[in-house]
Image (cartoon, rainbow, N blue to C red; front, side):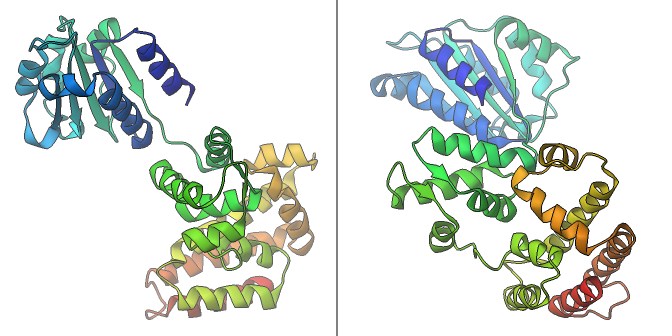
Length: 334
């Protein structure tokens, strides 16, 4: 996020590059930078003649170069934005000839999502000399909670820890989806308020009581009644609660629990760092470790692997997902 802030700040201060090559696995920041340039580089009067938005699937590199070489009309700059430029991946290297001698009055923005160009080749080296290459990397899921908090803090909102974790569990590390859901919340909630699990449930539709986060806690506590209620809810709402995600999260939990048992230092900060989890979760592992000794944890990991195979139709005669989870839950807790 600091790199994006610097790019925007430089543009605001007049430090504008002739080429912005935006690439990488995380499309959110690529879109944000391109959107900022599209809205702010030119005035509304200048945009009609001096701003073009092209799509990689509709053009060839030679056309991009021809458009980039145009002079502005009654303006200081000509802006060319190429969206979905990854569709030009086979020929993008041809852009190197232009990058070696770009038109000074043109701002060429290349949005190259989900891929990166070869940093050993001419194109990358040429843009590095005259322009800017920004690589947008996916956040790991254990980084997303902090990202959510920072985004909301910048708009004068707070968020409950459990509410944050509900969003991460439901939406993963897709920043675009998370941003859209946060926008919905900020429309209905006043500034300086705190976003709670109840607000998430009421406005986004993620259950605050029946989710994988609560299932994991119920299993860790060996709370049979609570775990069964959640499993029954999942069985009735399979589309919103796919079994593959549930098994994967339980497998991660018990794998981390195995690591927890091997730790000498079981202080909160040490455990959080060793397991790569939010400190909020450490008490869950402390509690679960009392209920599941190391030998039992190893058995559970085996049970989860078997359930995963059954969910994929291996040796289970296409059992319903709910039945697989109920059988798994019985074997784990008993």
